[in-house]
Image (cartoon, helix red, strand yellow):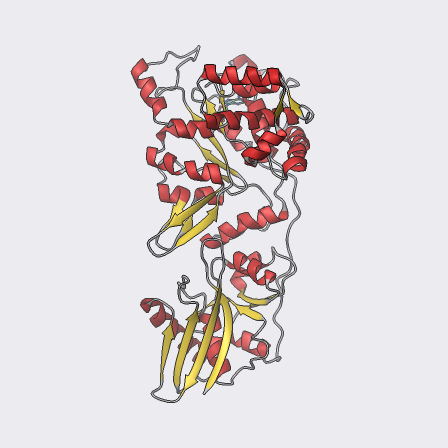
Length: 499
Ligand SMILES: Nc1ncnc2c1ncn2[C@@H]1O[C@H](COP(=O)(O)OP(=O)(O)O)[C@@H](O)[C@H]1O
Ligand SMILES: [Mg+2]
């Protein structure tokens, strides 16, 4: 009787729980039994592993082979455990030594030839293995992701035979060259291209500093999309751990990680025809959606009222909590979704309400219905709304003024002002708790009375009360970080609640 144990990792949201593969060889009728995988997956894994072992010049045991994947309740889809199963079978039969197996984890699907195929979710698995101080063997197809993390011994292999050679001490497996690029200078769209729109530029700067959500309202062709696309360029660069979190989501979807730009803030702009599932994630084997791919970056919803009401409703919870829990009958997965929302919309269906040049064709009733497509609770969560009016053609062609700053100039101010929030609470203002808000947004008695009265008059909700105070905190941070907010900070914050 012989037993061997190998280690691998499953994929559950962006978590990577450990899976132990136990292989037992015994007498009795030859055959292979796999416990702990769904029926169809068992059949496929059994065939792939057997043929891959034979094609790698090893012998498949002519005995009763029992493979148990534990624990039982984890998602164990696909071929990610093939390599661990094959090595367990070979180790149980004494064809490879067991001494290196204890402190090593294996990920990879096997082709019939014995070649290793890449799997999704390697980055989360490596982060967990690093926490356990274990080595990891991954397919070469996943080397780029593996190159992103330091302080973990990762080995890359092309075939099952190579991994076996390494376990026997007959050959080396290379580690992926650490090709991480440092935070680069930003080369995306630049604010220098936007003429005029001073109020919208100011709102964009506040949004970037505090991590707030922003709505741009204006007729077609006034620069709303231009402005939204320029938010990533004025945000501070991702820290290494933020970048790894964001890449971990990408890794779970199986999309390749771009080594050149992995420290760049993501910018996701799903079309208004996108389904709720595409936007927030889902499926029987839960996958992250656009909001999670935008984690630590920007989600841009253009033509906001064109998105379905249902889709906008499901956004509310993640906007508040910074994560999304996807529940399915069998299991539940959590994905991070700390994104900044930028939305854009026309003021009415034809787009020209309030435009001095074009006449609006809509009836008051049509205008009303258009706006009511966006629910109050969603609007409450959007901290700043700003009008983006038409810029006179003469201004578009005029020489640049001192107000037409480039993104680098604005970004420097954003980074400096955000520092105040990071020193106080360790997070941007949009993410601080109500208690931290009370501590960090001190108001004098006269200011408090003034603020209360203004909110009453505007008919704002309790949620808007706190969110507007966070915006005022950010405005004060841009103004030098004074501990006590004054009336100009509050008044400016309230002005962005008016649209
Ligand atoms: N404020 C502006 N400054 C410079 N160019 C502008 C401005 N507004 C609009 N444009 C020009 O008009 C085009 C359309 O702008 P866009 O951002 O798509 O408008 P919107 O999203 O508001 O419909 C831009 O590509 C740009 O050439
Ligand atoms: Mg647009």
